Image (cartoon, rainbow, N blue to C red):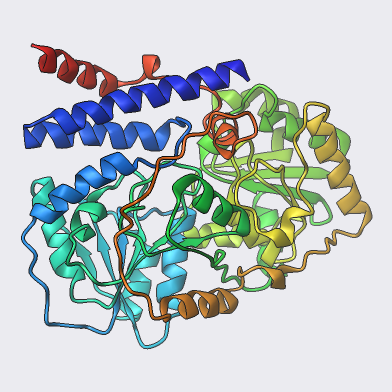
Length: 477
């Protein structure tokens, strides 16, 4: 606990120094270099706070300096703004579902980062729904902010799905004359992000996330929308085909997990390899399939040697192929220590029993009763094994009232559209006081422990710190 507290405080002091240096810097190009350093460090290193009102208000001054040219056009469409999209990843799936299941082709999509590798699944949906895909031209920061503002001014609603470190929307929409409502889908609830000064409504994934938005960010308004899941029923035919491909007996018990490799990086008391070991060692005729870990990973070589074909590791899959694999599990085990939130709910929607630990992120209320709590007294691996055996003895049934959550696509869209169709007047949020919390029971402490594995420390930081030190040195000369 003491080490976690020290890390949070060191990170916070580092960001405070950077803020002062940013505000003091007179050279515009150097200023935005420093802001980039700040944004990347803050978004990826817990520091006891989830926002920086002082820095955002400094950005608003530059937003005010960008010439304002209101548009007379109104496409009667909504604009989704993303930094980039991924082949895998929850927020890309949310955008796909919103566009694909919307009525009257009501969306266009704009990317703020010039990375043209848009997933095929998103390209196809946009083509079918007549959703234009736009990219900002190369240019300096303020030039790109003006592009974003000029394009967005033709739409009647702006929905942000940008990355936490992407501050361009603040510059684009921070002008005092901007009047189009802005909504932000809070897919990065656990991370520092920019936007509290310009966002009218934060769309949160759960009541927990809403509490954190209000407590730690002081957002003007938060609404719980959930996360949309659009999946068909489990297909036994595909189940049999993939089991044959993987040489898994049709009567075997298949445990399944999926997520990016970092979600399985162990911390002291949570190592997913131990979860696999205890399950395969204790449950006869059981197999484990994990998507997201390279089959030649050295970290998993001992387990592969121990269990041979009972453990299958598969690298990242194209989304459609990944969906096929969702037909094979009898029990889904969430990635840990970092949750694979979307895939957890995708399996729950298919009525596949789920096993997960409560790391205090925004799990919806409808599944929380199944969460395994983490306490100092728990032997977490025994608890996971007990849960697995309980599910098997119960005939692979798990009582979840999923209607309580907005994870069904139609329920989600009904809630989401009702919020966006409210008569929202845009206002800048100009009186936010910074919230800093180093306490042992804070949400940010859990973020440090279970998402970042206690490894963040500015003294070990990368090029960003070296660059910042160069600026500090120059500012004193």
